[in-house]
Image (tube, rainbow, N blue to C red; front, side, top):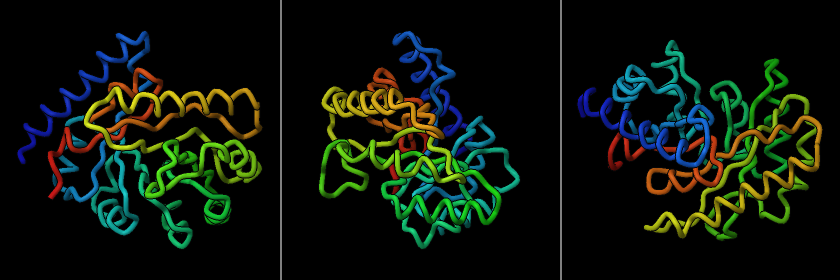
Length: 232
């Protein structure tokens, strides 16, 4: 894939983000595009960075580490968006600016410990299994507020918001209620006024449904296929 194709696809996605934000009465600057680079080789990621990508999302620690070693001089933010095991926490806090997928107190404590060891305050999102699907990671909706309360005192974590992965539908409006539910949960947590909890971010929406997610309040949309094409 040529740099020009990546550049044109990126422009199209950014234009769509801007259009839907404006039509929803939002400032387009309140929506960040996290370009999902899972399985994408470093040279194509570099082309995307040159075309203006500022945030990159990876699903696997080892794969990300190899890419960051190659692209580490580039001024981009790296986001971890996959399921994270506690034994990878020490690597994750060194590699990623934001971790989207914290779904247990055990993981949060390990991240806090590892971040403290390197003098870092790690930005995290709490992943919520808003659909209740057995195959999905994330804390159950009913337990999310308690988990946020438990994580809040951990000094080396900054609880910045929530993330979800709703069921897959080939129709964005079927996904909309799940996005709306996450926004409602964010509002509930905000009203709690928990110290060290900012709740400014909502990570939701991917290539097939990001416009609906933005309409419902997403601040981070995770898009890969629309920019890099279908994964092999």
